[in-house]
Length: 447
Image 1: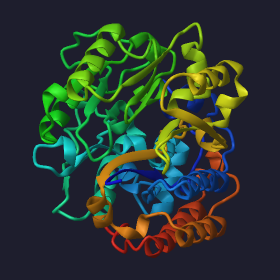
Image 2: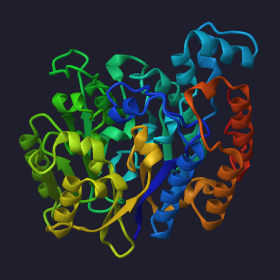
Image 3: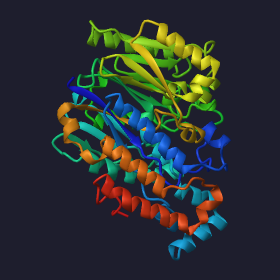
């Protein structure tokens, strides 16, 4: 094999908490104000990474940013020494303190959009950090994510890094959570699916209850800057009714990998036509390789059940023997309708042959499943070797991170704890200890 899909997972931050900050994310709202367990969350995420490594799938770690984000609070008029800033924000604007303490960077699928070198005219792997302008607590991640990705993918010979798109609603960009790549293999040219929720001109039907987050203009800008072939790119609109039911990103209702696309029938507008276009382009490109599209009906699985189980937020993975595995949250197994869908998929004529259920409850309660936690990076053998090795999963790194989490993370964290100045100190000490583990000495020196 000369091509790989690296999964780089967000390492859950020591400030993992349930603040309910994201409009349209039903799980986040449902668990707002509850007590979270940062240690359990980080260990659950680490176990998923370790499981993929043991299956022979390239796996790496995306480090958490420094929190609280004091520059945000200071820019909003809270001044004085750090402890005074926390105390004042907690007393007068607790929602802003929660935004500054957000651990949402754990969902690395929103960190950037990545294009394979095989798809780009200049044959480089392209990275554009998402601007995430739809939510205050997330838009502060754009610069941090760009910095981390530059350190991890630091060979100019292979990787090209772009700045985030302008921080304007006209270019709202939620990253790879709205990006799917289909291809025969990861080092071969593929088809790029970019899902948007609205247009700058307001010409699309809008959801009624929750905001659409990703613009058509952002997808068009990515196509240009990543030097992609427009004929191999499909800009499709999220179904606004599904957004109102909690489908805030496309990866809540569709997942694709190589030549398999799993998609709910209410994922896109004009979906029959879009799928026909996709199938036709694939057949023109790869006449000898089938494209399997498994469209799940509302009768088989309602949108509400898809959202609550996060079936489509599972990971599709190619194992070393060439077969595909679905890594799904345990919630899928516990819900009869979603479990029946998986059983039917396994019995159908497609490459999927196995399912693995994992406990990711801490992340799920905050609105992020397996696919949210990872950024997919298609790489050749040479490109994989050229990236920073300190973040690649190994038995040694797994043990180091497990010990680090157990040493530095609180067992419980409530919203009121965000005013505790000791929490800020604990996080700073933890990240000071993390940087040498990942061999990234300049990771936290830019603020």
